[in-house]
Image 1 (cartoon, helix red, strand yellow):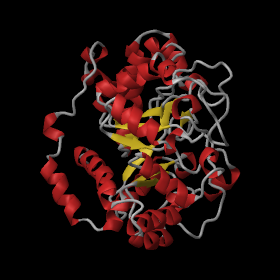
Image 2 (image 1 turned 180 degrees about the vertical axis):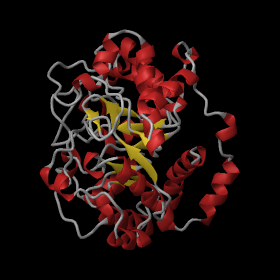
Image 3 (image 1 turned 180 degrees about the horizontal axis):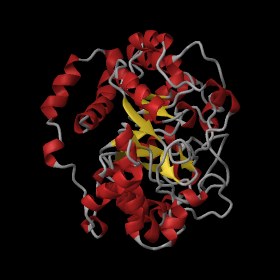
Image 4 (image 1 turned 30 degrees about the vertical axis):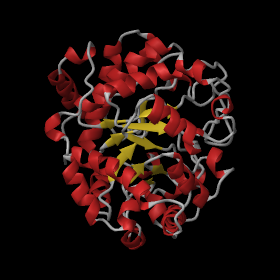
Length: 397
């Protein structure tokens, strides 16, 4: 195989530089599915098939013989999950998948060994029931499952903070396009990047240099240019973590975290980047598990709050595309809610995709039961499935 670096460089040159001054906010009309196409597919789906589209999970969640603590860390360093190294679809996963279709699979560092292994694994995943999309956290810097794997010859980036410090959005475009090009080459559909948080709290232990800047006016064009770079490479980006994880001290991977800002304060800072991403045409926005008591009047995580997801994100900001949760296996959720409460609660709050539930089977069953008992309506499920199907029809492989 020729060096992927040379291939990526050529791709970046082909993309052109006009994007640096104006980001696209459309979805290329020729690739946009008609509403009728989506409705026809939706009407043919069973309830289980619909519910499956609302779950994006680790591959380990389909192997019910595996028992481990699924509290993730951003560097994927939990010893129990590193030891498992699930890197191929096995018979147990196929059996579980027959009853539990899944809309997406997210791969972590321990799922990826080298190019040869990944080339075998991805087609196995694509053959699963539910036609899952392939997702990854590949921000660049310390969160890069492929970029930080020495078995892959790809360009590495110091951090988004370093890119933001240059003050030149072209560098954010180059980063997004470089990462998007190799992700597309390996077969990924969605990159859960870029971070749109504004890192305003020097005591922040989880965002830091993952953010482009502590200045929203600097961060906003970096975010949109990174998104454009991914798009030009054929990969869908996702801005995170709404409504902003930059002004927090604690890490939601392990427990409760909060921002004490009011909504007006957020509109003057955090919303600058998210508004820019929405105006550009972001297809996915990932929620934060942080509490915002001065916005919601409670300690409920944003992921579970209809005030944040429906009143603010959809209502006030006008966002109409997919809302995906941050991983529901994280401590900020699991220390307050069980699998059923978390999965059903976030859908009731307005999320479309439940990412990384601690126990996929339990969460799936809970959503089915909630529909059967009338707590969740099938019409509410359909709202989210429409958004997911529309996105899937735009991705051609």
